[in-house]
Image (tube, rainbow, N blue to C red):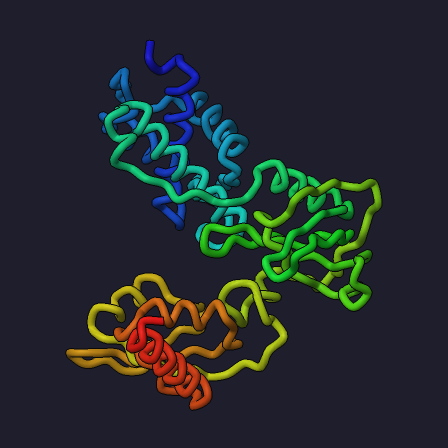
Length: 314
């Protein structure tokens, strides 16, 4: 029977997590059972309800497989812990989404040419090693080839965290040994896709009690220049581009100040780094920088230089 296969069980686990995830305030076993009885996509045997013992088996298995924590409140309602908030939830949600898409493609091979995923250019081997070192609080010996140096560096670091930005993983780490003495003691960011080799050592380190990776990066877009000056940035976006900004804000400080029929003004309070500038440049003429004056001038100068390049053909 279909429901006894391993593949189908995973589909059932995914269905259960996805169902509970749709109810941040909680959903009872009875309600889940009714939804299962009404399902015609995963419920292959058209069971009229979900047996309670099976529900609990699936719940425990789903927690282990996808990484979610499913909690039950005093009213007997189930929900996802840290719903839409923690890094653990976001990673688990990505895993669930990837599994759902993969499962659909397997069920219909013709979709393989219609559903496209972006590649994440990071070595799975290095990522696994880094995660192990993070979990065990062990230092890492690395060979890292920066885009800005001809020769690779050989740092030993204390891994503090991982961040994904624009399909790339970045390691945040404190340097304890380096061929460049100026970097020792500093917290730096390393592109995981630029790590040539990584080895977990047996040397333990202590993560500072007050360290929080979310707070470390909270004032920037991306991963660079975390110690810069926080400034207020104001932009105007046309009717099309403002819709993109509303659906996917560039930064958590984004605020829509005013709007009319043709455009909207957005305000940010952050450190203006290169990643933020790239985000603004990507909107082209659809976004105009108003403030600060130095950033507006920088963008105008860049446009003047581009006009010269295209005018001469050089």
